[in-house]
Length: 511
Ligand code: GLN
Image (cartoon, rainbow, N blue to C red):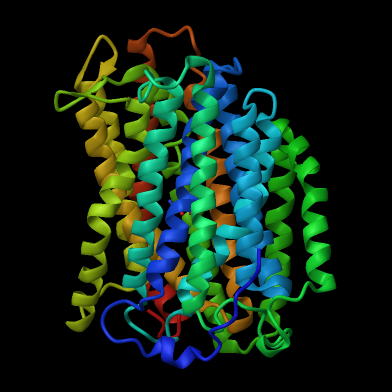
């Protein structure tokens, strides 16, 4: 795919000096990310169910397998961010990642049973190139101190979730036969479901191809290395190495992802190495920049725990939805797995614009909490959300709990997500030095990888109650686990709010 740079006349300054609440370019990135997430969440929302019902995995095993794939997905965002900073630039990385995701989901569409792990491996590497870099590009639309940045990320986050909502519900519902079952023969339901994910990714790339017209120099090449004027389209030797290296990596990832013990080795290695590398980068900057990077590290550290709890959603909560939830929401028959995959996303879409405007409104009155306090509030909502999840046990019959109360828990958890996740993205772009933008975003997602990993360990414990358990026993076991997680989240929230003045000092005026 060609990188268009025919609009170089549009310079960074004119992009930064936009009028109104949002830069107009944010909409292009919004739609590309929306379709990419459609593909990603569509695919991910099918994994656990598909493994249990189609590949005959045991529940606990499916849970850890799922967590392994997610940990790898997010771990590769670090590699993708690093390569974008040093070699490809954001745009080429994004295209390359998108193409790999198309390949992965198409392979799954062709024969999901046979090519399960190879398809997933392509998705892993592809997401690694795509995901951090599109987020970094959003940051590039703003001047360093533009107070509208958090609002922009909240909007972008709504795009993420619009994709998650549609993909997350439709794909699994088609696969399970909840939707369009009269048109799609049973034998090809999963092929169509994975195929739809692939179509989403194609849409994302087509959209981005045209979006480039309005992006001026943003994302064309790593600053200072490969100047825009030297032509963004030329295939450079180092780019070629990246492309070849990616293909070489796929079989290795395939092997690692299919044997979950490799995930342990991988996770034990990549984190310490990344930290060492990061400390080395930190040693090269001045004192003030170093403090900001340290603050970023504190945010990343806390986010691991947030995602460790939050990300029960695709794992143990997916099994819970399958086995312990009613199929009726306010009298309407719905697939509980679809609700689990997409309910939170729907709430984000409804609430993100309100949150975005709320931050701007609070800022004008000088009441806007700083990022650390927002993170703390995020944890508190997360904790309360898990308490509501625990409470589903009080609204159940024969071990089948109310889908309404479950959905309420998704709402409360989502309030937490909105205080943490888009703020995290935004704060990474603010705290990173110019040269470390991609890497920082990659590290932010690497924390998600650790979160996924932790979530897998916790989820496996919860799911170990096993297939044979009665719905009643399962309900008690799962909700007991959720109660404990809720308590931890509340404690982390209180801790964060109490240490927020210290983090604020480290941030050196960045909010
Ligand atoms: N839900 C968000 C997304 O898909 C954040 C995911 C994460 O960082 N774990 O982008």
